[in-house]
Length: 336
Image (cartoon, rainbow, N blue to C red; front, side):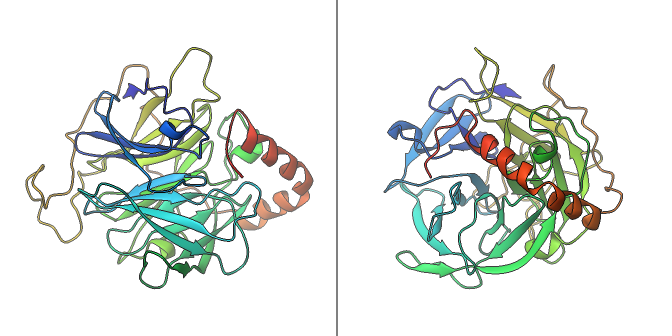
């Protein structure tokens, strides 16, 4: 779609699409001007930024609700030492995001994926190898207090053979997530693939027990971000810059979802695009020249292979642990 040339966006971890462009965040950074929420136009040029009122720890994903509210997921924990993680909520027109602290019921977890339902609180999916935990906030979020997360289940992404820089492990860990504009689908990604699930009655956590469709994302340098286009007809991804080839900048890639109608927000009757109450909808666009826009999509994965998959994980636990540590620090400057 376009290349992100602003050097402040050097460790991209979260992306959402809007009617006029994109919003992006970095991983945790030691450089103050990179710890921002970045708003980009359709050509990937930064048009404005929003600062956090205090320093975030490790912002790993970004989601957008139907009303335009942005949720920044400060949920990274490579060392497994955080007593709380956080969500930053930026409502439309607000000057600064509001911090909401969260605590897991079963100890620290590293996570890089958040799913934002059309209404209600975001859902966190951990970055555990093999089987990832699904965590929800059962009650209202209140600034200044710590909300207790509840484990709502687990998800095991299907085993694939998609080529990626991290081999087996790159196909086993969840690095990002997104919810479609109409709330009818959610997607989780690994370093190699995206897996799309159907949502029934707004139950985002429950959707992850279903049978997903695979969309291959082959050979992205370090793919950690995924989002739906504003019209819901494509997936958009972007890699971190640390592992991009020398002299290049991260590029937003488009993967069409065949035969997908344009999305309207739940309960709406397709108000005019651009009106205050309308979902943000981009017109359909042609694939960018040279982008991997002919990705295979729309067909369910044949079975989840949970038993065999977990057996492989168990048999390779030592190798996976070493490889995971190497991947998480590869070309990065994250905080613990």
